Image (cartoon, rainbow, N blue to C red; front, side):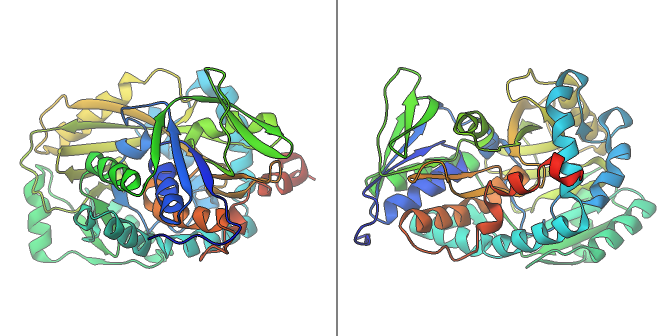
Length: 429
């Protein structure tokens, strides 16, 4: 039976049913805290379930870096790259970009990398613990992933860049002749070079993951409620979520894990939340001859990752900054189809299209911590490309904080107060 400390909260509400919210809810309930998970969507279509399924523990270096800034021009969508800055969204991405420039300064980048590395070092062990307790260990595949290049020049540049990068607990090697033969068989454009990472992983079925974790949460006594929280307000020093029906919810602890929607809920509490919707796109084919045991393959020249799930083959790409509710850009799906066709992948086109918003902060670090605006309010959102990767370790950290314990990983660098210390006005002085 789960144990609970004397004086620990007896009830909790988790706002947000993505993978981070689900992991937080599971961990709270496993500690004996009666937890309700509140999310408006009965169908899971968000970024937690539309991603590439890659447990990206090699991505230790935050994307807010001078290297990223220098490469932005050649990565723009209209130049054939994956970075999209739609003019209609300039009011959203211009302030974000100015903050990113500040976060890319060497001292802040180094501090961010150290904090992110500590969190990522626990990601795979946390996934193993979570899926073991949820009776779903087979969903985690620890086969690493491939990166391939299409020209000798890009292969030389790409391999050198990875050799110079900090990849945390992972390592990579040149592919064997047998692996190169496997990769060559997948495409009509044989790779000019390829490496294989070891230590990274993949979730084999994101839909099944959502189902199994939800079932495990409910079997522990947790409750899932489909409703929309449209406001957080503070009464007598405690956060009270209000639904769009006007109903107010009460709990000893409230955890905000609503992804890109979290900023709008926190700003009325005078929190500084410079989050943006960083939108990604994919197409998926249910019919494919791609081997089921093939790890994810990153076609780095095209900024595209291709993953074989139980449900089919998925090709994903793009970093589009703007608002979560803007219409999808049909050119992005067309570009993915062009890539698939040019490579000759075993993918039945046109494929099922999807678009979703990653919640991203300008320093490319998540927000994990306890609010200073309300004694019972905690938060866990803004994990950008690493939401799936960091969800279990984030859930463990949040549950520890709610229970009055110290998390196994220091989460102080992820507090929202960092944005008050590093406001654009202060950094310009």
